[in-house]
Length: 139
Image (cartoon, rainbow, N blue to C red):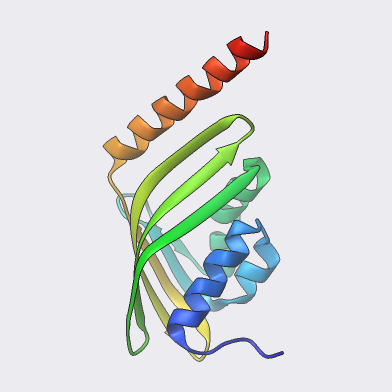
């Protein structure tokens, strides 16, 4: 089985790799010169830097989900509108993300995510509250 080269297929497969917390498979879909940016934070440039950023997710996360609401492709550019969910133990937080990907020769060369920090903070507070309630109920 060969890797997909259709840009939208590559992006979907990449997000599925992350959902399995399979950092090796996800990074295998990245171009050596990839640029990964969560807008408002400094970009990670190259696979090693991107792997370090993603490693922070996979080292702590017990689960990750990327629910695509819309995926649109125009040549090498793929836009995603999705809800990302990150789980760390009992803490579960979900937030809206819009992603821009560029795919060339079957490899992701650009990954830029846009999200609202206030919404992420609110989701984190809500998730922490639910985790706390869950702990209290268990005791």
